[in-house]
Length: 536
Ligand code: G4P
Figure 1: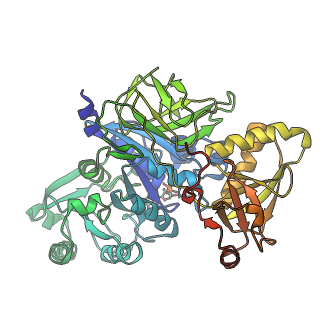
Figure 2: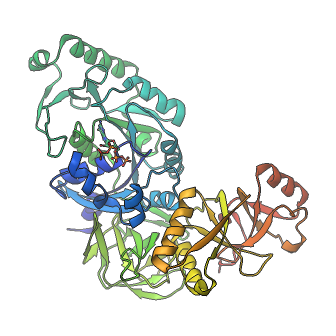
Figure 3: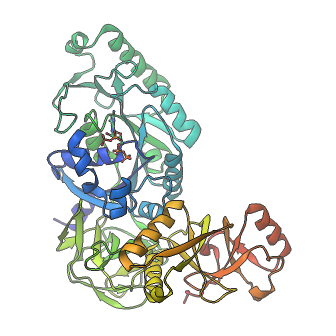
């Protein structure tokens, strides 16, 4: 197959949702339809297999949540699909945001009874900033839920996006019997399923005005469907692919991941409409996915996936060209030539070694500490530098040290590796020797740090929360940071790239300090610094 065909076949997307909306269930069902698994782990079986699908780490199993983002791959009718699993937990980390950088589109999963929830909002915002197409799947329509028109209105009011329903649930107040497909004006009724969606469902298909449906549906259900569709056709948005591409209009699907209602129609329509790998912007210009040159960027690093081996796996998204096992590439940031041996792809917890991979694919390679998140790798001579990943300012801070001072070496090693992985941000207090501060976007990151340092590095942590909520990177503009005034209540520190950062109690204090230091620039993230010491 040619590179153009490989690119055309690929779909790389992330599923974003609030916890419990059904992301694990939907992912499982997509894998089921793709033939990657044969029995979805519903009902009882699910209790034992649930975590086998996308959770890797022990802490995830214990808490029953997904902490790390994982990647799942499967084929469906000629398409090669990469699903990036973003953790939906309230206390999520930068990892989630970074994963979205590797996706070409997103599926926003919404619980029909709950509508748009807090976490959905946050993740939606990141997708919107990236300008990627967002597809909506309204889940759990087997349950009593909200009126579909009300949900459309909520998307518009809360997220500011118009929805175009691709299909419409048939039934009133949660007693759904199937789906009306608006693109080909046909009805699909699902047979009662006694296996709780463990197997694929049988269905009856036909045009909406097919007399058979009049006999199958009760009069008021049939009439309500006809009225709803009329209203949508007359008053709703038109299906504008350009608006969808720019993330201004979201195609909306209804279904139930648990009972398989509407999962297959969704998957098929999604694959038809979702974008193939798109051109990417780098500092040197635009990279077309079909270019000969191999380019990729690192979006995630995970150390100790296998605690016995202390391995460190770097996940990269291929942006252009063909990847071949054992190929030599340039690591842009260090200038080193690296041979990518043993490239891995992931299906659930299984890893397979692959021989080649194409734009849109995610591969994992072993690394001994050379690569960092956001780094670029490329083949050939032409330099390529993908832009730095956005850094998200931490809002929680704690001072940490090893309980046992004899474990100092392991403590430093563990912290450095976890900071490189992007699990947390580490700062060193400029005011006192060897005093380390950890910054996080959510409380869970602290717990993960504590757990991982103990289990992977054998270090018990002592952690004291600090009263700061704001970090500002200081651009000195030729001055000395020691001349900063009125910062007694704040703490001066440096980040892992030796950039000076001020930790401050709250926004009010921040503004107060900024006003008193007009010679300095206070940046919300290090990306805003114009004098980056890393720059050539
Ligand atoms: P998450 O990954 O987004 O957190 O959600 P997950 O798939 O774990 O689903 C959360 C709960 O919602 C699960 O129930 C799951 O069975 C249920 N669920 C998912 N999709 C549907 C659906 O289409 N309809 C209905 N009615 N429920 C759905 P649980 O009781 O927490 O877990 P379990 O006992 O089913 O494993």
